Image (cartoon, rainbow, N blue to C red; front, side):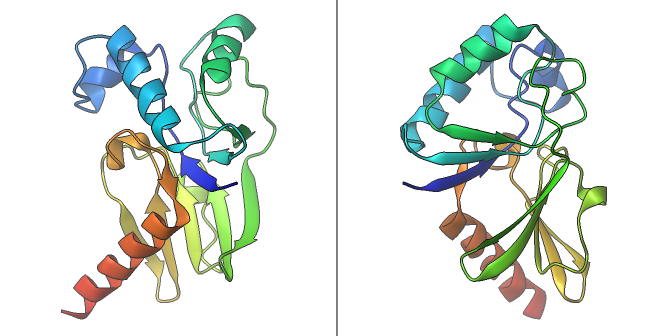
Length: 170
């Protein structure tokens, strides 16, 4: 079993293609590409921490049908578009101790915890992968827009952080 992090699939959101410069002709192509890439990495027994904005709008049928097409067991954290869909998650922030590290997970970066060394967020789409919150805390964006429309594993997150820290020292 593996753990994965991702956010901002925005299934069935036509305008997200234009807003974020997503390389898809239409929402059907986008939905299928994200499902395919998700399932390339995530196996049925894996756990997926989904940091908000799964489906743009829709009833239980749309979200349920999409979730059923995706491998993994989901832990949903509420995103800003999750008020208008059927996920009904009440989790807005979650803490996890994993890989010998304390991690804070939230959708919006402004809700990150600067007292925690590693924060994971979504919401900012393609704007950045890693930023510093303060001297002792970093935030990593796990949005699919920043990771070529794939969920990310912890070793990818660690490698991205290490590259960021090396670049800072230059």
